[in-house]
Amino acid sequence: MARTAQAAPPEPEPEPEPEPEPAGLSFGSSFEDSGDAADPFGADLGGGGGLFADVFQAAAPPPPRPAAPPARAPAPAPAPAPTKPSAKGGRAAVEEARGLIGLGMHEDALALLSGVLGLEAAVARAQALREGGDAEAALRQLRLALMESNDDAPGLAEALFELSDLAARAGQRRVALRALEEISEFHPDHRAGEVAARVKALRRVLGR
Image (tube, rainbow, N blue to C red; front, side, top):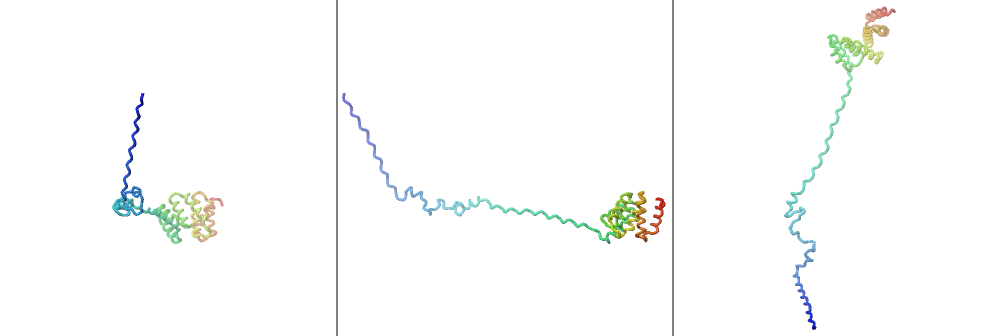
């Protein structure tokens, strides 16, 4: 049996030769940065000028405002200096207070004497308290004023006389007698007649 001859495979067609690239159209050179190629839009997109300069300038945020300095707290007002009445002012206040006491205006007298120092003011204050119905407070504040005073304080004799009167009315007769005897010894010219009469009366009551 005769074999049939096998057909030879077809030969591949030859690839066409690439056409020569025209000068100036090389892809390698199109992506190379020569350093002086112009921007395709002819403008600096960063805002330096050109076509989009006004767009980028309008979109830029405004510069931040400087923070305002903190407001200073107002300085505290200086505390007023304590007022201490002068001797002349104190004496005038005492005289006016005595006039108010004589008119029955005890509260006004006490208000006027507030802050006034000295035994003369203490005596007037005690008189205002007594005439206002508070003899106990009058005696207490006058004894305290005498304890804090000096032996040569102005108004000492009258303060002792007022103390003796308040103490006798409160039933403290020995206190009243001692105050009167001190007046007789150290201030013999002060209300001499009244002091002598009261000393005699108290000694008789006390059995001396």
